[in-house]
Image 1 (cartoon, rainbow, N blue to C red):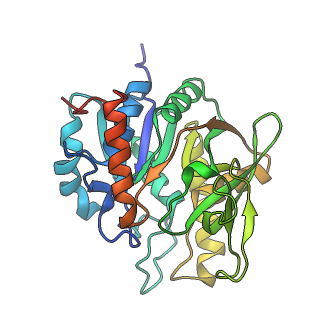
Image 2 (spheres, rainbow, N blue to C red; image 1 turned 90 degrees about the vertical axis):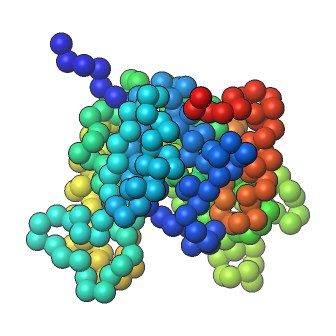
Amino acid sequence: MEGKRDITLIIMAAGMGSRYGGMKQIDHVDEEGDKIIDFSIYDALKSGFTKVVFVIKEENLQVFRDEIGDRLEGHIKVEYAFQKLSDIPDGYTVPEGREKPWGTAQAVFAARDVIDGPFAVINADDFYGCDAFAQAYTFLSTAVRGHYAMVGYELRNTLTENGTVSRGICSVSPDGMLKEVVERTKIRVSESNASDAEYTPDEGKTWVPLAGDSATSMNFWCFAEDFMGEIGGYFERFLKEEVPGNPMKAECYLPTVVSGLLDAGKCNVKVLHTTEKWHGVTYKEDKPGLVEAIKKMKKEEKYPGNLWE
């Protein structure tokens, strides 16, 4: 009898966090030495996920094992995948002088050899909340080909007081299906209404209002196993059609692949609405607020004092 397939959490952790300044994926956020990533894995495990895959730079393998992976042994299956510039299909070459990674779609594709079932994808440096993982697991436990999901946050719950952020603002149909994601950069809390937001399309000359309850993507996606093949096909087209025009900086983004499949009628995407508050460290100044929020959640017994004891 074939064993039960894993429901896997892929964590994208290859970026170094230039605005934050350093390797924020392994920065401690409580007195016990836990990182944001620990809370995501704890919530995923509690919800029913059975495996975690870290997508990292190969040179960071030992530090990830020392700081994170080894602590999880006995709790959940752990795998590593490496995002490499050289991981491209036969017949293509890396443009001379290119150092920038190929983007989030290729980061997920890097895990193709260790995925054998449905999977979720998150960022390493975002705190998503337990409800998000519970909803994701419920969806993935019955996931079928071409039917995907995205956890949608309320925009007001994803902002920082310490600067502007980039967010994927979603259009959602009346029956809760994703119609499109529009990437907006330089979003901040509205100066006229603290429960809403605004963004600037022209470097601060004008500000355009955004509703605070707008459904927002924080890069928490849920996919059936077939999505890996879809990335592979899209990535090859990207290398052929987009890289020649922008060889140093062109990137293949995960939401772009999803949008392309939606436009082609090859998939549908359910929006899993959550009222969880996002926490993260886009800027160094965000960290004290995150530390206080975690301390409060531990006091309220939403998390144990030590996650892995």
